[in-house]
Length: 243
Ligand SMILES: Nc1ncnc2c1ncn2[C@@H]1O[C@H](COP(=O)(O)OP(=O)(O)OP(=O)(O)O)[C@@H](O)[C@H]1O
Ligand SMILES: [Mg+2]
Image 1: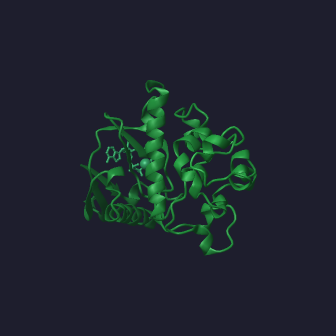
Image 2: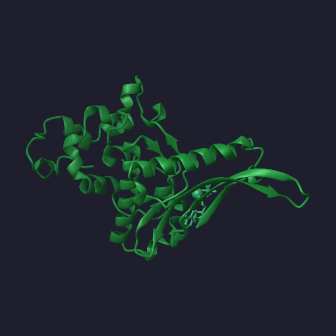
Image 3: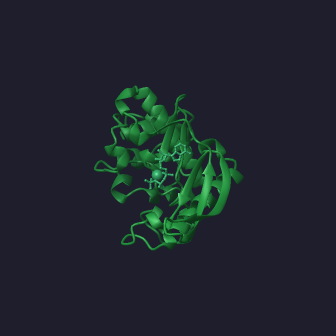
């Protein structure tokens, strides 16, 4: 097992007030319980519960610290793995698992908010396990989308395809882009991997994209002139829909 202690003593007082530790504890333990209750335990370590403990320092002073116990995952987080030790297909499979798990979380309106390589553990069998829900939030936010006018815009509880939510603008420089894990054409891969989502992408879902990305040929053709009722329409239009 892993015991994760949320000890305010180790927070930088210039960055966070002591209450930040208990906020992280509440977020993390609630997120685990929420995901388990909704049947998504296959993406996370087993969760054995949460406690308070008393820690006594060398001067005999006591403080109360919260902790959670989770399954120890035999493996290595992606920040400590070398991407070049994996073939492109193996890396694609890992990223597919990350994106799939995250999309399921979001369908339940859970936002991880810190999904970076160091918070993804890869096991010996190349299974991906997502950890560290200390910043997680249950509920979508106006900041998720580019044009927020109304709470209905957030489409609570609806699956939003990774094609839209994980679409990457050319100049993206998030930790995934910089990590060396992704060496292929990301957007094309999203479209190919989740092509079965395409018929269900609606104009309302484009709010997850910056407006300049909505003008890209793929999204333009999606709503202009393609017959999406024909079963093979994506294949037929693939050349026009350059991503
Ligand atoms: N259940 C687990 N099994 C195996 N390793 C784990 C587990 N939980 C955490 N770790 C390892 O410990 C590291 C830190 O854990 P975690 O991310 O939960 O803590 P944190 O303090 O919130 O970290 P940070 O803020 O730096 O992301 C992880 O990157 C991972 O390498
Ligand atoms: Mg972490």
